Length: 211
Image (cartoon, rainbow, N blue to C red; front, side):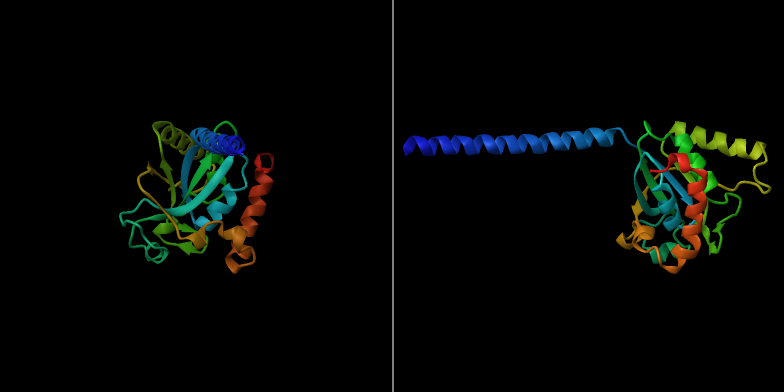
């Protein structure tokens, strides 16, 4: 009996070690996967729209709605809507550059809103709805400026492009109820009459890049 107890204790010890190894291995794999991802930050109107659009693309791992570009720390939605914080409604787009490039994300950005309307997208009016690219690196800045100039020189739009290209600073994640808003509220009025038509148009243009 004494030897049986010893054997059981040893077996339990090895089982625990195996479990810990498996958990440690899983964490390592997650960290390795995260290391392969990059971030793009765009503002192009209501972040419910931006989020819904970019979630459609292959290679986009996650889209986080939030506030950036202003001076107020940890702003609320109500404060941002007042226009007093300087923040824009924006999205952090976490993507795998091995699947989708920053260039392709920029293409989706330009084609999913009107970059010529100052502080406005449709009926959404205010500085919080401005068109802006918040770059995370010198390379992102150069690419954003290149495509903005290209669109201008090729006269793609009748009016001047007013999109800001500015450095990424702080990003404040929006309240939980804003995250995955369209998926959670597809029949809400704004979703039905604004986001759904935008998505249908987007899916036709980018049908080869959808998930």
